[in-house]
Length: 411
Ligand SMILES: [Zn+2]
Image (cartoon, rainbow, N blue to C red):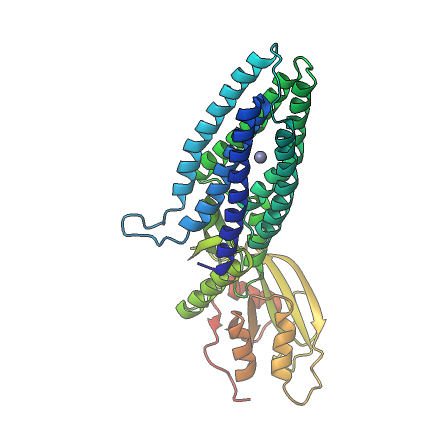
């Protein structure tokens, strides 16, 4: 388990301790002073304490290794317990509404008013700072539960404001106000209960993570060399983590070792950039990519009638052909800037062609350096015979061209 989750756990623990402290302080002061809003707000803090506890618990349970009986780990234990507690929180909300509604037409006295006001103000200030810190760490480690928890803590500026109005109402004997403020506090409690119930039910039903996370993962997939598209990307949340699977499309000539390397790269890159990803299973799609780009070294520009050059590194021009479902979608030409170069023309022209994001090369001749450079970047190299681009393309599509297994010349 990465250290960053330890940091998250610690933060959740600090926030939880502060919340429990205020829950107890408000309950005691609320009971002695006889303030219904303060008591209601004590329950609000208790509900907060539970949801903070789950942020901590989720990060904790992630450290438990899977067993033979539970091969996917115990992430969902967080969601199940959170769901049960959400039910209790909602129940507490109803009780408070009943209690507060009963107080609307009754005026009571406020004992120890300074302590009551003090505890409400302290709650607002301290929880605001705790919440700011939680949000900072939550964003750092990409933990949604911690970030959400921090937002809630900062909302105590409002909930404590409501409590203060209720306290002053009782202090100055203003009718109705205290009961109404108590009902408002109950809405805070409902909000916590409903959100936590929703989150846990969604996670239990394998909800996908946020669109933003999905887009980020798609971008990383597209950036990995050798990946020519992907399909069936499925992501699901379990506790604070993301599990997923995807099928990637690879070129025709990719061998098992290359495929293994590509799929390792994918998992490594995604886990590095999206910390909440626990595992991503990479499969190989049965079909190869529908769109592909070909590169043919040519003698001179004559559209699809351009003749193939006798060389690769020393070709006059390169022709790039974009295919979509085996149909020519577009083609364009580029001069070979390394034509006159004495040394390393093969390496540099290969790298030049690679910049165009090509999938395959058709060539008559190729030296070892070009061939290795292209194949290391998972480009298929086919051996072409004489002919023009149109004819070679026909053969390529009918799979009549041979993959170039070894260089055609030594240098
Ligand atoms: Zn709260």
